[in-house]
Length: 397
Image 1 (cartoon, helix red, strand yellow):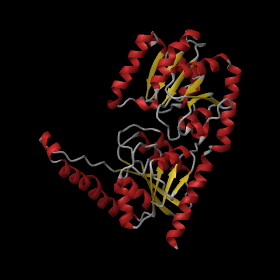
Image 2 (tube, one colour):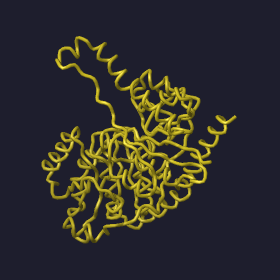
Image 3 (tube, rainbow, N blue to C red):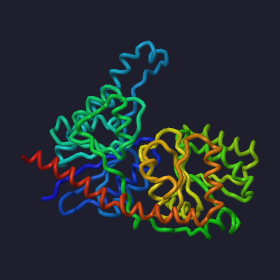
Image 4 (cartoon, rainbow, N blue to C red):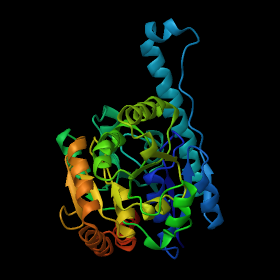
């Protein structure tokens, strides 16, 4: 009989990012002779129907609204009461419902996405139901509260996506003995070009010879698109017809940041060179269009799945020296690493690769080879399923 695994995505802001796709690939690649997946989200999204179309059960578990007093002054005056009410509403009550679900559905293992800082109701539910629980640690967090530390110690495994994540945890005093590092892997067969570069050039009225650079990632401060926008006028001096694509969603909370980017482009005279392409379901099309793909995060990126996606298309990469991408990109061989938040350094690197197309192409070829050797999906799947097997064998014993 197969073992039932519940996979739960902890993101609640509605944007579909890298964590979703990592879980999608993991669920799709499971050995179905051993495991039956059930997938949970907090919000509806386009992957729900995609997974259901693949014959996988998907459930949306709405996130409970936080408790607030009707009179705003009470939220300050009675903040301890408010905090207790939210512990009940957002931890204890959901945990009770989740425990009931886990027992009734006969779940054998819970695999949570994102971080030890999230999904605490599910962690508590698994503990109460005596069902092993693991989480993927996908973030480099600035702080781990007492609850994260408490539950983190009690998980069967914390699967860190990079050594950068694990090092950051230890630096903050969260040196858990149950951490295992398993690098991301992607299924390159999943990435199929739907809109060709010529189609996109026509769509955005781009000259056939205009060099294209860009970033793929939700538009938000820590993703560092500002560094590229500030580098753009320097690149334009050498390549006047350069076009820069920012591919990614902008949430309501990030509108001010996008407005800042638009203002910087106006002030530097690069408005016509900058294109906000927005959210794209098949972002790989846009990477295929780019001559150079950049990764500009100004805070350490936990891993940077877009680096692997770019490598899958044999694209030369420019990334930062911080976080997970520094474990992926070999500077000078498969791309270039530059200091985060330094527009001048990024501009120099871009000009270098755009001016030396043969060198850039060779970097792209070596990048794809490195992906195939070290970051293939099957390697990730095998290591992750080994973790499942060990945990379930211990439980059976």
